[in-house]
Length: 267
Image (tube, rainbow, N blue to C red; front, side, top):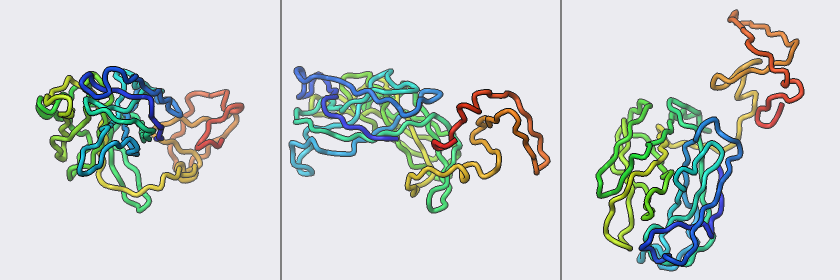
């Protein structure tokens, strides 16, 4: 998770007020640690500094969302920009975008600060989301939600120069419907080529202060792993198993002595 500021990084359509002279560009974000696979990527504007109109009596000018460059999302980085779609020209000021990247997966749980267990999942849609005028596109959840979950979805591509943003068209306990909507400032059409998105679904709201748990809380036993992780032991360590279970060593990692594995930055 993190945030970044965007100013000169802008994308827009050919019928936008920014065309044709305003420079286009993307900003490259490098994740703090590379993932083992391409992560789901979520983003949202946090500021509205670029306002040349008088909302809510007038529409936002400029009207900005977030663009992700097609095929730029990798295990280590992604390219993003402010998205003006086909809307009116306006003065662009510095805007802050918050983002979160997480590896795809389902049937995950965590306990929040109030002791509430939250079940959640994330996944890619593939390039299967077309426009508002093209009809709703449905994506099934893996988790078995008893009520319709809370969902977040973010566009992870920019296949069409019109830009656009995601809208939900159906939500049930077993699936989410999404479309790409477009403005009607440059023209009235709301068709769109297929785009890709990330979806996050969770059972409930939660309260979490963001503190990273200490290692004793994460790993309460003398030897524990998380998510089938490896336990790295230096040569000569003995294991006493009080639960009468089997302990098997498979590989000696010789670098564990000189470069010990870290938990929250501590050896």
